[in-house]
Image (cartoon, rainbow over all chains, first blue to last red; front, side, top):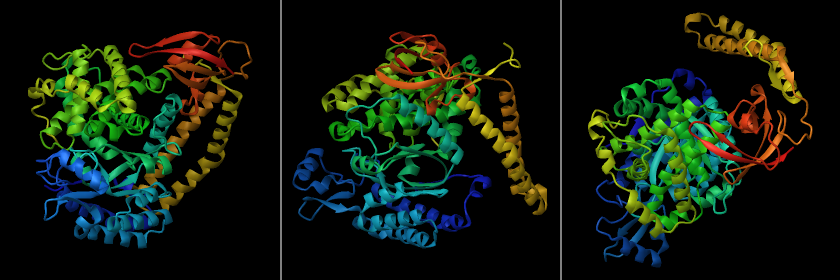
Length: 452
Length: 156
């Protein structure tokens, strides 16, 4: 199954590119496409460790091997058995060398052509990283790219493919055109929330305020295409973030696509007729944009040192659950300060419910977003158990005030887990609230929604 | 108060900024956009001329903003720098504690509001609730969905 998604983009937007940018664009798109083959070598939905660990291996065996050889737990190695059966780590750039070469060559060509010095540096650094594993240098160069309309990210970034330990990174690529207007609006919300939400002792703090960028997408490839993310935070390692900075990318084309094909059809499927009449599509689309933005900022605001290591494979579940409920919690400040009104907050919360169901719909096609589904299931179960959401032939009227109150409670719980909670505590909470059963009650209504 | 008689509350700094924007739009941007339209016309066939369309769109937005600014500047009510009266008034900078976090912002008229720059409208839920309060007071700001307690720590 290929993992390439292309997006339609208005001519008006491509017209914003300079002649030199237009020259390198086909090379970048081609380079991105080639990443699909590398990701195909990593992906395997039948095993928790995908093709990143031997299929017959037990967690304890890997943990034991990692004590002797820390490279076993490197984000950029594949673990295999040697002839004697011993676990060994092989660097990504060696393991996938042959398949990475076409991308490397295309990036080198683009680097020669571009007249933008910082972009040239980044393209060269990425080509080098694919050849010798110097991924941090590529991340640092990416953060330093300026004065360009293009954005390109190619490399191993997200950890979701590794359901055993949440360590190994999956290859992805995206090429997009920066949307200046969308970026400006997103930065306004970022500034309000960063002004309002105070410091916390264990928070991972970049040296300068986190950058936010909105872009129209041309192509997603590899992991990003399979997961169809609407936002990402890069770089994804703590040390680079703390020393060099961090950037949130909002993928406007993916946000629009998901809204049209998934979120809005779900809204029509799960809510009662008279309720739906109060929420026009345009209002919900605006709510959807705010929902994604608030979740993205909340995720960045609640990055804590040691949480990935402490919570291991539970981290992505709690991280996803927290960014959603904390995002809604932080929307309070937007309402109180007059940035959004009551109806817009309701639209954001309706989108939240639809997004929760969208994970269930997508799960039927791929388990790559399973951690997201589990995170959303925690929230859904909690809200149903507390009476904030009532299921009766589809959700009729959510109690927004009750929902908001319970989400503030949940945000406090999740944030504490991420800040200082133990693995055992988190596991106990998950065993109480993590169930996919409530989704099944909506199966009939969601039957006609296609998982994209 | 009807919409037509509504006064726009501005600080002296806000008024200077808006006047500056108005002068720039009328004296510089307007003539620039006219020149752009003339140049685009020279490219020929207007039905297929994206540069012409873009320039015309920009001109419409510019004229809309000029009209908006004229209305505001004609109906301005200036708020002088808040004196240390001990009460929160429009123009006061307030330090508050909300949900255990410290926050600081100035309360201004809606036209000047920019929450990203810590300028909150007097018509926002927080702006409305805080006007007239004094240091030490705790005010509950509620809307049908959200609610927060603001403790006034300082008025600048």
